[in-house]
Length: 150
Image (cartoon, rainbow, N blue to C red; front, side, top):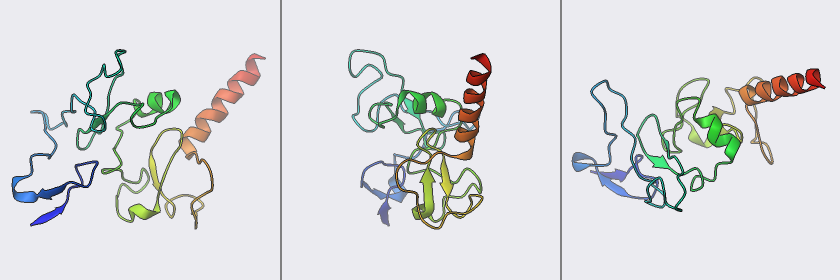
């Protein structure tokens, strides 16, 4: 049986009975991250300057922040939680990856949210950038602290 492989970031066709792309796990059950970028296949020093890889908590696939097109702020944000790659992404509210065509990705932290899980729910994806409630709260706290200091 051949299917599109969810563990690969490209359109690799995978024979499930002999798949070697499956996540590698440590003795404690945690996923062991790849030591290379799944986009450019380079190590952590692809440009001569160290660039720490960001790794998916579910499958271990990794990417340079620059290959993932992450900003400096987004890179810092994804290091604070169990980040999921595009193939493993699930809704941060309901926890499922069903209806992935309904998933929005926060432009500040890359978490996923179903439009219908939001409060209030969204019928259509927003035009332009979108920030989740966690990032909006953090932004308000930073702005409030700044106003207090001035």
